[in-house]
Amino acid sequence: MDPYVIQMNGNSSLPSVLDMHVNIGGRGSLPEKRKGRKARWSVRPSDMSNKTFNPIRAIVDSMKVKPNPDKTMIALSIGDPTVFGNLPTDPEVTQAMKDALDSGKYNGYAPSIGYLSSREEIASYYHRPEAPLEAKDVILTSGCSQAIELCLAVLANPGQNILVPRPGFSLYRTLAESMGIEVKLYNLLPEKSWEIDLKQLESLIDEKTACLIVNNPSNPCGSVFSRSHLQKILAVAARQCVPILADEIYGDMVFSDSTFEPLASLSSNVPILSCGGLAKRWLVPGWRLGWILIHDRRDIFGNEIRDGLVKLSQRILGPCTIVQGALKSILHRTPQEFYQNTLSLLKSNADLCYGALAAIPGLQPVRPSGAMYLMVGIEMEHFPEFENDVEFTERLVAEQSVHCLPAMCFEYPNFFRVVITVPKVMMLEACSRIQEFCELHYHCAEGSQEECDK
Image 1 (spheres, helix red, strand yellow):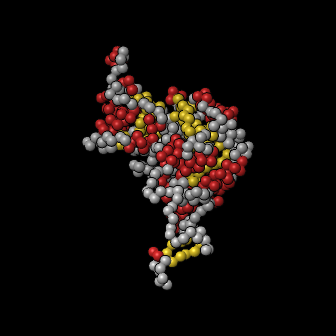
Image 2 (tube, rainbow, N blue to C red):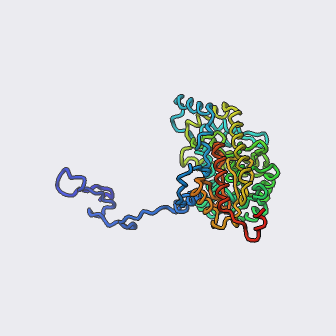
Image 3 (cartoon, helix red, strand yellow):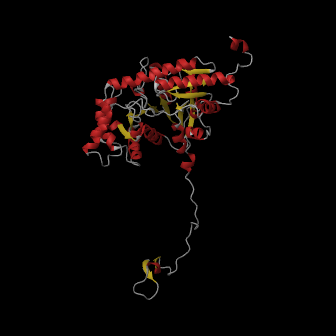
């Protein structure tokens, strides 16, 4: 018998569909019992999903505390500059999107790495004589988060490790561990404005180290590295032959007394994947347009890493085409005044918040130089009611309706992070409530009563 025949049971010339079955291999008309798989439901989550863990969500979602109903909630916890409406994007940016939509040119699929014209615009905008870029060096992504994900996926295999800052953005660990990549934490030093402990960093590097993540300006610290410190970081990478993933999403968000130095502009021999996006500088995080800039002037990455990034980008077809269509106008028509006004508000709030919190006994804020954040140390010995920063921030919500993220979210206990994008009036009110809270719970440490009596 032919191995592939459809046999019909019964004599009817028009059998019902239920009377038909496929006989494969000529083994008679009765279906055999399936082999290999038991006929019962067994649906389990994948290893990747089980390994995916977001510490911010885990900590925040477990905080069951309710805010004080007599006080309006002030959320200083979310790194989204659009939440309070006081930092809208520029009208030119909005108009660029309207024009792109009205043109009808951007409703179809784009190449997975983005339109060539859009990549040319990014290359031109971020080109430096000491760090040249062409369209082939740019890959557009769905936000800076996807840019980071693609970089990790192309540089590291399961079982390898990456070097991640502590305190640092929790997404690095979330992405790496879901891919089976080990995370090694290097320390940032609050007493040195969050510079890297370079000796400790270098001690972590081994034969399985796939890349070093450098986040500058920093989330959650608001720090901006000096040129000399960046050169020392690059020296470590060059000495150990470790490529760098530079998270520079806050690259243009620095205060007037600091300067941002793109990492790739300071080295010609360390291969660097620099990640950025529209989210912060143009205040449109929901538009989800990011990019990877490939800096490889000694051809260390070669074609393999470039091709790998292209292949990975093809898993999901890139960022929104409408935003890509608006990109040229966004980059060239946004007035300088818009950027200056944003930075002016952030610096004003940073100075206000730092000054107010520095005057509160038991708190040790670290002055920021950029980004949208400020880290505050808690002298836990003066707050014996609380076991750690999580309990401290929980009670702050319960009593004062002020929500700050405990720095346990960033692998750095006994600190909390303040977001400084809120309106000035709200910033003042939040600082006043934090002061009231600390004064209520502050206790003199043992043996320091004399100091407290002053």
